[in-house]
Image (cartoon, rainbow, N blue to C red; front, side, top):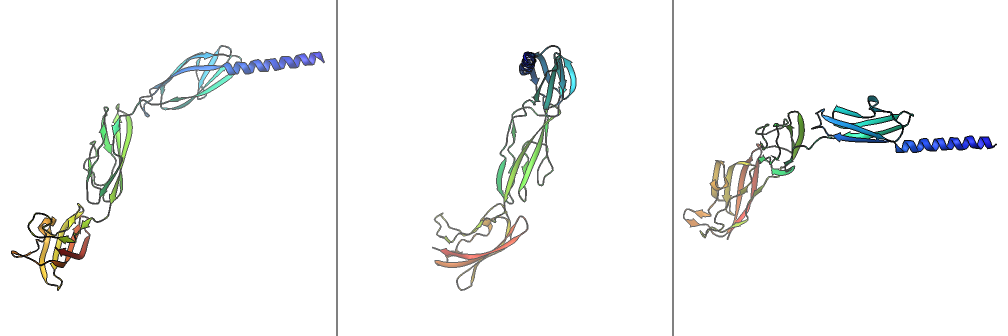
Length: 278
């Protein structure tokens, strides 16, 4: 019975010692990151193994790479599993990440809202050296190989660019352009044609969405036309009404207007309303 107890105590002691040895097995390493995601120039230096019993076999992703120490070169960005076995069969494992060095520093407004028909100059600024830039295929872009192209999308659009640095490294930037499709045309409801330089004319206020004014007609309350402009006019000033009949001002009161406007997308909209002379 005493002999059995002795064997049991010895077994427990041996297991305890193995556990302690495994716990003390330590992998000492240094990492050098790759210059970029696509460059195989990262490295892991396993400089020392502490604990356990020499000698030590070192494996990278289950492939033997050294004994007692190892310098592992030509690594891409990623996570690598380093395993170590000592001469007694004890084992330790660690996952080591090889990252990549800093990407180019840049600034860009990544969300922009414009009106339909407007253009926008992308405000990308890069503060570190790059070898080139290419904007991916997208509609209405002035130049795909400059930092700040002018874009004129007809609908919501993401513009994405690839920056190349250190010859083979790549980084990506993007901007989302939201296109407002509302038709911004405003007609005043009153004006005072008295030559005081304030609110002397009546005409619509237009946004950049407008291509031209094709018709602008004003009639009095009895239907008599007092102002009639037809054709293709590029600005509201070309069709504005001065409230005069020759050299005489029309009487105060309410007048009716009809206006036909063509937008840059080809749509023609007719507007009708009233305006009062004060």
